[in-house]
Every structure is written in C-alpha cells, then in structure tokens.
Length: 141
Ligand SMILES: CC(C)(COP(=O)(O)OP(=O)(O)OC[C@H]1O[C@@H](n2cnc3c(N)ncnc32)[C@H](O)[C@@H]1OP(=O)(O)O)[C@@H](O)C(=O)NCCC(=O)NCCS
Image (cartoon, rainbow, N blue to C red; front, side, top):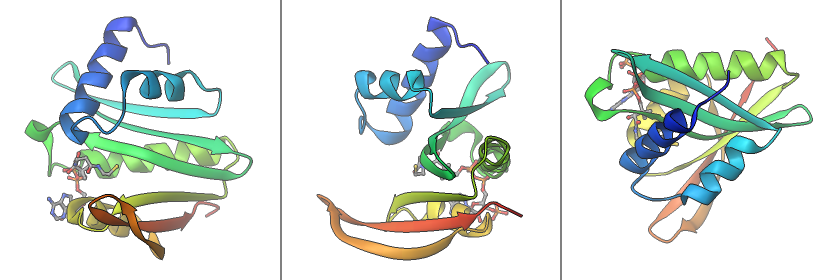
C-alpha cells in the first residue's frame, strides 16, 4: 500500500493522540521508510482510525505500536488489526512475534492476551514511570 503525505500526516496525528508524544515525527518516519517495516491500517467512516506498526527481522516480528482512535474503541478494531498484522508478518516469513507494553496498560495487555500473546518477562523500571512487560506469540500455526 502506498501512503500519501496526507495519510502520513494523519497517521502521525493519530500516533500523537494515542501515545501522547512518545515518538518524534522523525522516529515515526524512519520506521515507516524501513524495508523491515510492517504497517496495517484501518479506516472508519472514510478516515484512518487505527494502525499497527512493527518490523520483521529474519523470522522474528516485533509489534511497536497499535492504536485506535478513542471514538472507535471497544468495537473489535484492534483485535482485527492485530490479526491482520500477524497474518502479514507470517506471510513474510515470521515464526514469532514479540512486543513490549507498559505494565499498567491494562487494555493493551488484555488485547494481547486475548490474541494469544503470553508474558515472558518483565523489565523493571524500563520506563521512567513503569515496568515493561515482554510478550510473545508463536505465529507458525
Ligand atoms: C489498546 C487499544 C489498541 C485497544 O483497541 P480497541 O479497538 O478498543 O480494542 P478491541 O475492541 O479490539 O478489544 C479487543 C479486546 O481487548 C481487550 N480490551 C480492549 N480495550 C480494553 C479496555 N479498555 N479494558 C479492558 N480490556 C480491553 C478486551 O479483551 C477486548 O475484547 P472484548 O471487547 O471482547 O472484551 C486501544 O485502547 C488504544 O489505542 N489504546 C491507546 C494506545 C495503546 O496503549 N496501544 C497499546 C500499546 S502499543
């Protein structure tokens, strides 16, 4: 899928809205331009309302960010998007997907567990204000 500058602006605006400035525009663009990048997008009422962004290195996928516009949450959009992200990674040769998430991000952890991810470790103090939970899902089956 080819994204226009306008699409990229909308994606970055959604990123800022959902994550409150965790990433700079430069970081976001660098990930999008990487040949290892995987980006899946959902449109709601004709506008981008959700995306999942990650990368694939050898047979290991990593999910960096998944977010849904606040107006469209709890409708199954993230679950569908995550499934699409994993299918795409599998088609590109991934056998496993890793992610890290703030330990206090209960909605995201619930989403990941319901999508088959298991916690494999905790990085204490990884964020200035929280621990990081590392999760893994086999995607060979
Ligand atoms: C986490 C997030 C992506 C979920 O998006 P969503 O489209 O609302 O999620 P879905 O409707 O697909 O929910 C799928 C499952 O996840 C879990 N879940 C999602 N939101 C939840 C919430 N607020 N509280 C508890 N469980 C939740 C539930 O198990 C849910 O299944 P159910 O609705 O049948 O109970 C969304 O809240 C978001 O964008 N948050 C801000 C960004 C973020 O923190 N991203 C994750 C870290 S990268």
